[in-house]
Length: 108
Image (cartoon, one colour):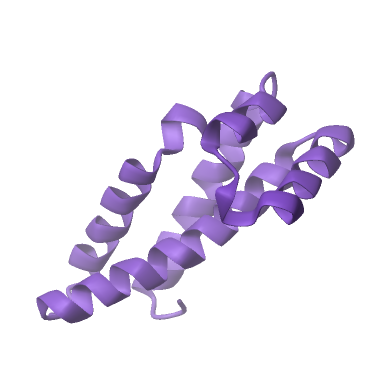
């Protein structure tokens, strides 16, 4: 998460995946597919972030997610994970690469 994986970057990533797949979607279907993929990718990214954290921080973050859900801000997440950013970035990159490969192969 953090600056390296902002919503805008994830959206661009997903749009590039759709273009790379060459699905030939009309604008409405493309928007729907983008939303679906963003939702799925965000779930995977969140799992990767939690998985890369030390247990104490992971538990705190999970508690915050349970309490706030979609109202949890990126700043609040960054405050919890600060100090583990390199591990998190690596975990998120790996998840994004795997997600892209699965999508291009028709598994998402």
